[in-house]
Image (cartoon, rainbow over the protein chains, first blue to last red):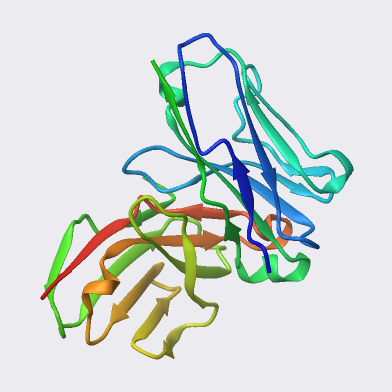
Length: 116
Length: 113
């Protein structure tokens, strides 16, 4: 079974530039998450999708971050314009419907963003 | 107060010893509790979950939950160097928040030979 795929793995940009991250979840997983993990901290949920609908985006900085999940499969997370404090690893995770109830999230390798 | 707080690390134990990792949470209505392991530069992976008060054992790992004290712990028996990683405690509030995990900051564990 293929895991959660993310790209790019690494990205370096200057502040005020834009960046986009892509995620392809495990086939058949209805729930998709984007987490932000700043160095030395635990992951923080940015947005949760159930199929192509948003379940929770309460911690997404909507003035600069946007995310979409077209057709309920792949997802893109965009940051525009980036700030220094956005430097982090962006983790995409997916879960198989009901198994989300037990918190079994499958994480991708992450996209490491450095903002200079 | 942080929603999920873990004991400050890093924690260093000798090979073969018991490693004890602790976590407290602020939301008394939390329903389910998880321990994820994250190797350096890698993504988190689920190793244990627990819903009910008491102990749950899986091989060398034991999760303990005390909802009255809002406390969760993970014990690793016969620690091995391969257990060296960051351990993340995560909590699910349940209800309409299913699948939404709030993570602690993590505890770095080092098992030295």
